[in-house]
Length: 90
Image (cartoon, rainbow, N blue to C red):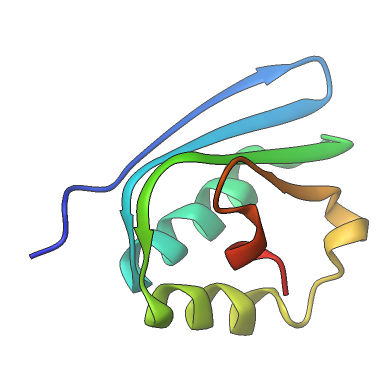
């Protein structure tokens, strides 16, 4: 059973900082996308830190990629950082 997923956020000026923690699965992908939609308005950049992610489930990665496929990451300034960043980049 996957460990609990947590997502924390804070905003500094026009940058939204998101910290992912735990197991990243399909529901985690939806939660991340909803948070970006909810809090990302008016930001120039969204930084997503993956350093506290335990593992990335293939289905979570697929959900994220499909839902982001119609949006340019550059348009919303989406950048992944941390040890798992390569798994999140399309």
